[in-house]
Image (cartoon, rainbow over all chains, first blue to last red; front, side):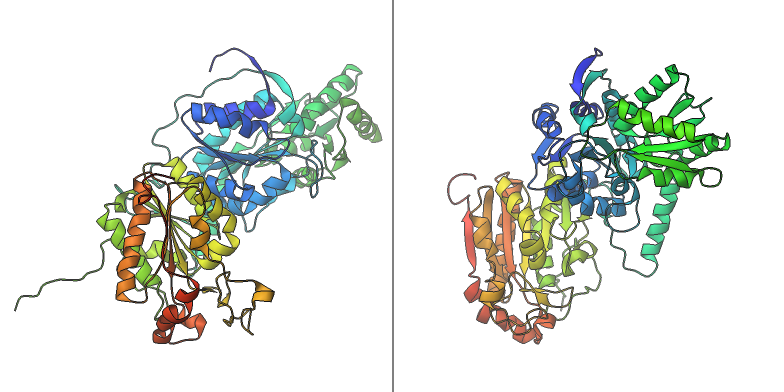
Length: 353
Length: 253
């Protein structure tokens, strides 16, 4: 990979970031607006010495990911909202079996078949579970094509560090938008990664069983306790971008593409002397609650804006509940947002006092 | 007189009591898989993909690297395993509810792609672990907890003949149906399993063996009567034999 800047779609940035991270298996299924990812990888993955499979369904693709992950191989799958619903079964099993793998969701409008445009309606599904049982994914929400590339690389490190599935939550704006991206390659990936737990035939270790079934008395409770401790340990990964929040009266909370559009609105309002700032969570799980609380303790007021009917706002309110509250502005899924669409609600919230 | 050991448990089988009911054929099928893995030198290379149902505990009985697949998804999981580790020997072990009902899409496409994996499909015409509900292979007239009046062709459709269906798919190198109700049939069953394993190790394609098996508990039969039912009722509807063998066709799939 050269160090020159290239002009690519967010979907391509995701695919290229994964290759740079050493991903060697991709399992996909066609669904708009993520098709650029499997299309790109159908050639690039074999060229890189890896395996590309167009599965018979998203159900199968996610279970292929489970199989490859059980072997300790860097592998991933991508889809869009309805397809990600179908992957939830395998995601739950992967979480229960503690398998590292990356799932990309290029969020489209819902519910149901919805549309093929951008939306953020899958926040709850990504962050709160989605599948059955108590589990958490690490959820990363890139706002630019460069960040999509970067976070894709990081997602594999996190997946293996915690032996946990990681979700990249983008949307149709991120996937379809073209921007300059500077490709880079991470330092050598540990060739021994996963060697102490992955399956490769019981040749030099006693037989290993990767499973999520725990029937013995107390076994499942023990597993859940173990998972809880893991999720607590993950909290150190919480991360957000703070833009002009230091002296802001009103902090606007937004993630992903919307966070980036709101940034433009904030910049424009600042030019007019309005004291507003942006808080953009980059990790949606773990949620950067502590940083938000610190802002709240400084007396800031909050407005959460999302491309849905109000999902992340619940986590914002939870984070600051002891000292502050957050207003909410929801831009309707099905409409294409512009910076102008957010200016008025931000101003209104600022002036309400 | 000197004692001579003429019969013993394959090393790869764990020395534990199985949870299977008296008269259940899973134990025999497990043993045949174990014997083939040992005779073919595959134990250290094998990765087993276990499915949902009575046989989920295969990983407690065969001392292999194993992964547990969601219900019906074993062929998809096996695809992922094999693509990730092409040098390993990969097989699934699935029941009829798992493979022929909820997992129909996964088995069909895994076979059609010609994934270099082997599938041992145990057909006992009933959902065992969940308590005896109707399976896709339940015979016409057979009573289960969800077809208490007996399976009716007009209402529930006909029992699915998987070996015939799988044999018709492009990527399949070997496909057979066997039974383990008699010594003669057990010998043939072992040969078929070995063949299904060989087409994988030789890189020829997908291998599939359907094993007709008993479920005395959910058939409400004694072990002896259940064993007799294989020849009396199952084999007439599910004929034994090799349905595809590319090694005899002089070419690969």
